[in-house]
Length: 384
Image (cartoon, rainbow, N blue to C red; front, side):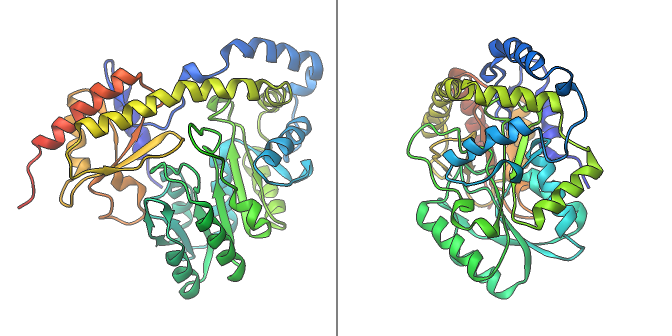
């Protein structure tokens, strides 16, 4: 195990005057603060001491029922008893690794992939098989090659507004991937924390809806309610679902009953449906400002993702650029980002890339910060 590179960067970002393009953190202004007092009163009035008591490991029944409708809106059919509530989706990733990975087992991940998933998986000592990607995400032929030649315990993907790139798999690739995992009888873990944060375009079908018996689907309310409540949920095929409950019993018994009750009232009371458009309207101009600033300030040899939603943009520079080495100079000038190398399981990859987050800063601040980063890159010595 090792400390999270992003968490270490965020310690630096906490310094006064620092502009953070680093952490994948929802803006506090996006939280429904004005609702929390009313939700608390409703929960205590409706559920009384039950909301403060130990509860079932599987989850608080009213929240499980509320999530059935949310999942249905994403094209996923489920009954309430099959929805497991977790303490954020990060706990799901650790539980899956605990259950399925023995030292040396192969698991397949995108390159780049979510750093938190690597942190959850790596303590169980897997062998990583990296999957090739392009501007549309995972290349299906790469997955087919790995599944044909390697016995993998599972495939891990973030198909919609991926962390760190912001990319989304087109429908045609989703169908191809779903067919591949069914043909090879493989297990796929679909991590879906960002799909509600769509600023343009139409929703995309989940992989779970295309191959339900071969996909563990995990998501969270952290981006559309509040991350501090630590509410995630998972839908898995049997017998994995049963073992996820057993694993959770040994870790935390159950997710906070009170926080689950707040989440249940937030959904069933229609507050999520009313508040989500406010979140989207808040983030959209920030993303647009970042894309415009990249176009205006960054050197022409850079290219970057242009996502329709989510929280991140992935920028890649020319071969020989070391964004990790230049991060210190950017921090000295009061701007922080995450170097790309931290999103790969193997050393030596992603050296010229960087992850940029736009949710935590005002549009004008984002423009100024990227102008500084571009200046640092332009001043950097070029390899011979």
